[in-house]
Length: 619
Image 1 (cartoon, helix red, strand yellow):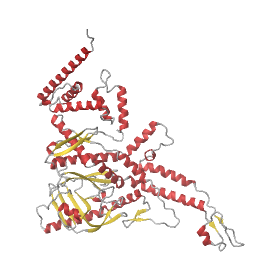
Image 2 (image 1 turned 30 degrees about the vertical axis):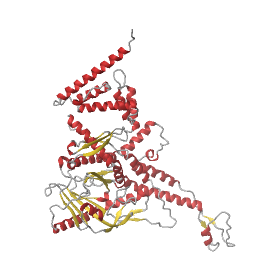
Image 3 (image 1 turned 90 degrees about the vertical axis):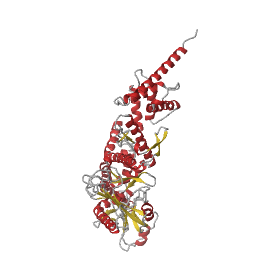
Image 4 (image 1 turned 45 degrees about the horizontal axis):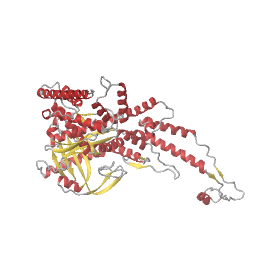
C-alpha cells in the first residue's frame, strides 16, 4: 500500500480481525504450495543466467548442486545464456514509446485538455523515472518470464507511485488464468522492516529473521533484487523484518467495491473496499500491471527464453569440458610404469618435467606414455551444431549478439533481413512492454482523476530546449485514451528517421508549389531529426509558431505586431480553423480569428509593397 494511514474499516472486533488474519494467512500458504513448481523454474533460470549452471531441480522440490564424479573432471561454465539475455534486454530497452492522450472529440476544449493531459503524463514519466522502472521490470520478465508494476497513490507525497514487483511477490488465486482480470483475487506478499509497518499503518508488529530472495545480492528497490519469502540458493537472512500480505479481491456480489485485506504478523492492518478506481467507467480494480516475455496459453505466468536454452547450455558445457579433458590427456599424457620400477610418489608429484632424470629399476620395462589418439572430429561438429542451435532456440542471431556479420553474407539487403528477423522474434516481448506502459499511463491518469483534488505544480520539457511549468488538478484530466507517438521504436530510430526525411526532401514532397520549403517546415524537420532549435533563426521560428498557437486559444487578447512573421501566423491560424470546422458553437471565435488573419495579410502586403518600392531607383 501507499504511505498513507488507513484504519480498519468500521473498527471490527478482535474476533473478526483474528478470523481475517487466519483466513489470509491460510490462503497465502495454499497459494505458495500451488506456485512452488514455477518458483523452482525461476530460480533455475536465475542460476543459469548468473553462471551457476551445475544445479538442477530435484524430486524433493529443491535446487541442488551437481557434484563431480571424479576429481579430475572439468566442470567449467561457458555461459551463452548471459549474452543472449543481455542482447534481448539491449533491444527491448530501446522500446520506450512516449504516451500521449488522444482527445475525445475535435472540439477546442477536448483538444486542449488532451494536450494538457499529455503534459501531465510526460511530467509523471520524468518524476517517477519510468524508463528505469520499465528496464528493471523487463529484466525480471526476461529472466523469469513475468514481472509486475504496482501503480498506487502515495499519501506522503500526494502523487502517483510506480514500483516494480518481482514474480516472487505475486500470488494469483489460480495459476491457469490468462490474465489479472480473470483472477478472482490476487495476493501481494513482501518483506518490510517492522519500522516501516509502524510508520505506514501505525501498528507495532513483532520483528522476525526472514530469508529474503535476491537475484544479485541486493535487496530492496535497487538493481534487480527484491524481497521475497521464497528461500533459494541466493538468499540473505535479515533481522527485524515482517511479512506484509495484501489480498486484493475483485468486485463481486458480496463486495460490490471489491475487498482489500492487509495482514502483518498476527495483526490486521486494513480491511475494506479496494481503494483505487482503476478500471473502465470508474470501477475498482487491481493496482497491478502484468508484463511477460512470452505468453503461455492457459497459464498466468509467461515463459522465459532461458527455459528453452537451458538444455542446449547443458549440452554445450558437457561437450566443451569433455573436449578439454581429452586435450589435457594429449598435452600432459598418461604415463604407464611397471609395478615397482620407479618412485611413483615422486613421479605423481613432479610429473615428467623437462630435463628430469627418471630412474627406473634395472631389468624393468621403461616407463612410457599411453597413446591417447587424436581428438575426435565429432567434438568440433557437435560444438558447432550447438552454437547454431542457440540461435534457433533463442531467436538471437550472431549478427545481433556478436555485432559481427556472417562470413557468408555480404549483401546489405540480406543483413537488413537478418535484423528484421531478430525484431520479429522479439515482437511478443515488445508488445507486452508497450501494453504495460500504456496501462500504467491509464492507471496514473485515473488516480489523478480520483485523488488530485487540489491544484499541483508540474513541469513539462519537450526535449527541444523548451520547458514549461503549469498547474493542474483532477478537473483538468479529461480523456484517458492513451496512444503512442510511434508504432515501432526499433525501426523508428533517429538514423532511419533522418534517412526517410532526406528521401522525402529529395522527392519534393515537403516543398510547396514553387519548390520552396516553408519556414515552419524547416523547424519541424530539424525537430524530427533530433536537432531541435539548431540555430537562432530556427529558434525564432519556433517562437513565432508558439505565439500563434497561444493566440488561437485567446484570440480576444491577440494583437498583430510589426515584428510578427505573418506567413507563419497565417498558416497556424488557418490550420486551427480548418481543424475545427465541424464545431458550430465557436462561430464567434472563428470570425475573430479570420479577422485576425486579414490583419496579418494586410500588414504583410504593406511590407511587400514597401520593400518593392524601396528597391526602385529614385529620380
